[in-house]
Length: 425
Ligand SMILES: CC(=O)N[C@H]1[C@@H](OP(=O)(O)OP(=O)(O)OC[C@H]2O[C@@H](n3ccc(=O)[nH]c3=O)[C@H](O)[C@@H]2O)O[C@H](CO)[C@@H](O)[C@@H]1O
Ligand SMILES: C=C(OP(=O)(O)O)C(=O)O
Image (cartoon, rainbow, N blue to C red; front, side, top):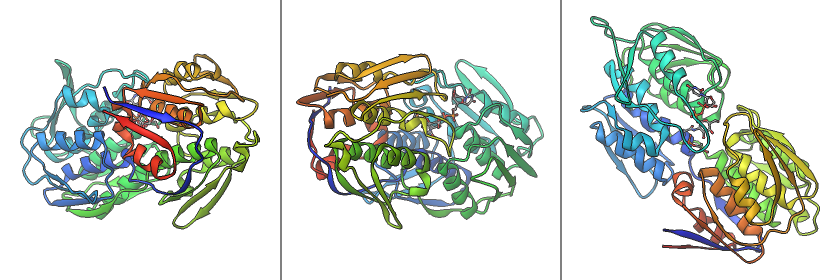
């Protein structure tokens, strides 16, 4: 099994390039299903999830090519099997994003129902109900969602859809479905994440008529056909936030090229309150953390909420920072019911944390010491990397497949900033 070996205690210094966002790239790749013309996507991060999505699209008959310069070329001119099998859905829940585009383009889709996953049960009932409101008939058979249009109906129909909760991939699926539906769709209670805006911008470049993306009410006027496009994936705010926490904890000075401060408002606010210096530039973010060495960082309490609130995908990484800052902090996880699995691993490194249900109380000021720890999910892995960078001695992290789902060459980027980190294969 591959392992990361980190010898902690090095300040991070220099410049790092932030990659394209996983959570934008995955829906953008699925959007290529909506057209029979070629689509070019630039700044696509090199991730296991991207490879899985390309394999899934290839399975459906899409011609795909991924170049070394991070450009993906897709052509869905002829689609064979409009099906997402369980093997692929199980390894990447975002496979559900094929459902909306396939229904919009073909009026038929068979997508394996994703099971629960480490961080929570993560149902997709809102995706299904939204498509039903647009006229789809759905059944679950042998573990698959089979969606069809009634006999004699050629297209989905626009509808007013208010989801029971804010759902990111739910909004993306219904947004893509609505672009080719007949008439107008209103998505109320829509997610407002920057990745939704990126998707809407790509769809508009393909000829879709969309207003209100980036707000809680998106209006889509369906068109008969979408064409190809050339689009660049937005920078990954969660990768940027991960590096920010790593630099803050180690006491470094780093320029994050490509990071967008406007997408990181809640995280930057907490970092500033912790005592970290942040400068926003057009080309990226500069962070310096002089207080780390002198014990002058302050632990920060926060609640995870939908964008523009504090992202659940940054909760674990900020917890690692809190462990080595001074004072108490209360972290409340409101999005997923089981997203504190990193707590037990942080305890093995010497952290002082009490977790109960949705709430974890961190007593800061710990001196962490290296140990063997296990990744339990994607952001838990990133949290352990940050903890390893500040821990005394050697930290070994296993189960790296979680980390590789969502970080493009993280150890190479950290090494370039002065970290002592190696992957053992
Ligand atoms: C590929 C991608 O973009 N993944 C992100 C996306 O996941 P994802 O889109 O799966 O997360 P959602 O926004 O849908 O989930 C929010 C909450 O709604 C619940 N829910 C959602 C849909 C549904 O049909 N029924 C239901 O009950 C979920 O269980 C969860 O408790 O947003 C999450 C929340 O910001 C992030 O952590 C993930 O990184
Ligand atoms: C939970 C995450 O991703 P996914 O929805 O793809 O599991 C994440 O990116 O932190």
